[in-house]
Length: 246
Image: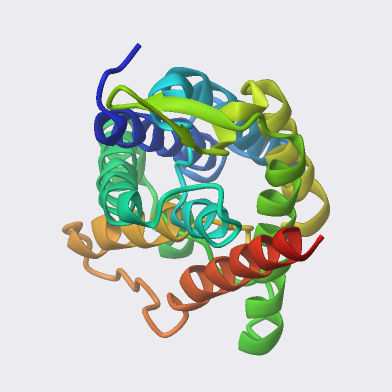
């Protein structure tokens, strides 16, 4: 068991991005073993399994939020302490950056061999299939709503942080496998419009890493970057509010 909730969220989010971004790199970059294979099935499946692994590792120590939108949604629902929110945010962002950077190092030869900059960027952050900010925002909000709303109704209530039992409905309360399936089905059914970030740290942290890469033609698309941040926060807040009302 990892003793610090901060370290647990950091490691869990890093594992999530390492395995999740890894599958995107594996199917999109040139000369990889999986290049050209049925990417959407592989990507959504691997992200679901990545969530399973990350949640399994961090659940007992932090509740395995691994996602700032989840943290906010649970706090709004009264299931998580607002005082812990900033710490969780920082751990999640740093973990996402570390995980995506390790993925880059693992696949560095394939990044160098890939001239398609859109394929390279896709291994770090999301983007819309059809660029329509209003609909893109709605898609991210709905996907995250389903994640948080589902978690609130399935989760067990409490874990112990710093010697005290706290009300913490983190994703880890779902016993890892169910939440992996939840993310999997969200990706399969709702992810085709924006790539289903449904997690501000998952998108923003790796986008920062991509911006820092020594690539000549990079375009981090900061004009779009607010969508996978505010969309998930909005959906998570709506889920928390509706749960409280119900």
